[in-house]
Amino acid sequence: MSDNFDKLLENKIQNTPEKKEPPQKRPEKRMGFGKRLLLTCVIVLCVAALLVCGAAVWGYRLSVNGVNLPNVYIDGVSVGGMTPEETADALREAQWDALEGESLAVSLPAGAGFRVDYLRSGAVMSRDEAVRLACAYGHEGDVFTNLRDYLLNCLSPVDVATKERTLDETYIRACMDEGRRALDDILRKDAWRLDEEGKRLIFVKGAGGVELDTEALYDAVCAALKAGEKEIHFDKLLRDIQMPNLAQIYDQVAVEPVNAYFDTGIRDIVPETVGRSFDTEAAVQLWQAANIGEQVVVPITEIQPEYTAEALNAILFRDLLGAQMTYYYGSTPERVNNIRLAASKLDGLVLLPDETFSYNDVVGQRTEAAGFQIAKAYSDGQEVDELGGGICQVSSTLYGAALYARLKILTRQNHYFKVGYLDYGLDATVSWRQPDFRFKNNREFPVKLAAYVNEGEQSLVVEIWGTDFDGISVKLYHTEEDVFDEELPWVLVGKRIHTYGDLYDADGNYLNTVSENTGVYYFHDEDIEWPDNYIRNRGEDQYLG
Image (cartoon, rainbow, N blue to C red):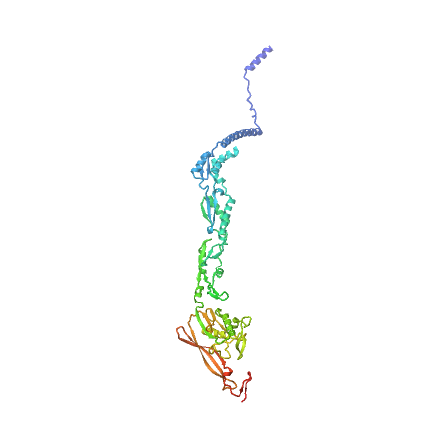
């Protein structure tokens, strides 16, 4: 029964709805932070791995696709997505390499200059190099670098020519040095010179003093290369060019004219010197207007002298200014020898203007060694045998010629007695060393003496030749006064002679009278009428009443 009851109870229990308890909420099971971080990292790594793999594949494909990146340019020419052959064709069509083989011409002052090759300077590159750069961009790195370049290129275009172009400073400065050397060679000339004919003064503006601003030149060349210019001119200097010292140059160039003249040393005419000068103010203006390196030509003004060699040769010694002839009748051979010897020393002698003639200096001391012989001569009023006797006839004949030639007489003394070969007042006695006969050439031109002996006529002729412009002539004459003895004033012992010259112009008109000399000539003793009771005793005369 118990068992049944139990069964019934159990069935009842089973059939009786149980009073259900409200379900209790079970606590949610949460994942920890570390696990979540780990899971995130795993996911990120997986994604990254996938991206890397994708990028690597993509980069690889870009590296080996053989075409340019999409936004690639070469000096402005679009070559994106092109093969090397297409790139080359595109550059050719765009005439990209027009400057290849060209050069920049740089002109400097004075005609100097130099060239800079565009290719060698780095200003341009060859078409092959340009194609290589375009194809290399985004292809020569690793796959990731190439991918990066591709992505950047998609965002911004790249001009590989501009990016890779770098000017070669070393080459450009070497070209500049060549140009500077050329300029130095041009301007290394003298700052000034005379031309071969001496008619032009030539300056080279800047010669020896031009210094280029090399840094400014380098900048100008680089700018021109980048701009693709064909030529430029550069003349910027570090400092201004100084004008030559014209006053100093004038002192060296200017020459005063000098007349041709007769040189007694060479016995010939020394040619004239043509004077020259130039206008310094005009030279300044011409110099300022010239460019660096240009020739400044200043005309030289020639100043002709009054007398050229040709003109002087035509008038020199053309006129007979004065002449005198004397005879030596009855002279001994020794006296004639002395006359001939003294005359030979005068013959051909030239006196320059203002030059003084000394008879004793020219003839020299009368010695046997000089060829002189003993002959009659007067000494202190006495006739004596003397070495060189007779040469007073030469000095006297010369004196007469000098009077007619109107030369300035400096020293002259008449003989004690009147000479037989000349009239009163025309003689000149000489002795070694005094008295001497001296005169000066007071004319504008040289004079030449001619002295010769005519043995057939037994004559001595002395002539003075020169240049006569005024044509003035002289007529010589003298007046006489009686000279009496001091102790016997009624005894006539000589004559006081006053010599004059009347001057006439070329037409024969009288001009004036000049006094030439005054001197006393004593009579020979035998020609004086002495009183019978007057005793002559060698200078100690006695009058006995």
